[in-house]
Image 1 (tube, rainbow, N blue to C red):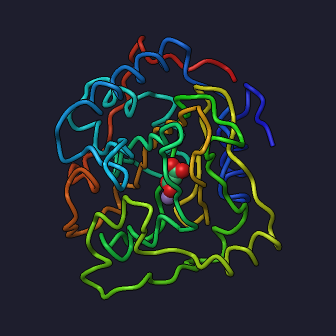
Image 2: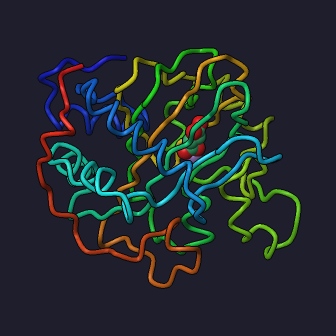
Length: 275
Ligand code: SIN
Ligand code: MN
């Protein structure tokens, strides 16, 4: 599936509604990718709770909540085209619920088992409805071999399919199990296999700068990165302001407490070009 540069928001919204994911008809410019990579590299070198390491501590797995302390990341969340897209998909004002970069370092980046994001947001944060949207930006070339995101198109129509992983409620609520390869809420491999047989799967690949949207209920996963190429994916989750959880308890770098509607603002350093 591809989207022509002039694709109207309404056409993108229909593809998103139907499939639970869609490529966006624009991408980050080369200089915007370079700037974001620089910021990500600098954040990874900082000792702060938002920096999450792979098991074994050899490589950074992810960085979280960067829009709260990095001005370039904050500027990206305010990009007028992104804000307009999120408002159109969600039918009203939006704010940034989560911001993260999953690094998938060369030969070190570990898998994300089959799961649905809304399982975490509903059960752990009390998000009322799946009225949020993930926007995923490839900061590296993403190919079959470096652990691309794999989605099951249409699975977002089926509601939550997940199973609780082993352990009691307190263990599941340990936020470390929401950011590690040992996820607290997963879709069993057998169930995901059945869904994949029925609905097919789609690898989200593309050059650095490509952008895709995907739904909170879509079943998705990604494999270990056994290649020599890093696969950094920057993810902004916009939530509808009307859908903000009333009393979240997870750390604020996982669930932003600032639910004020985001105000769009152009930043010349973060140009989007037709893809
Ligand atoms: C990944 O980075 O491959 C997983 C992203 C996600 O589950 O949202
Ligand atoms: Mn996910």
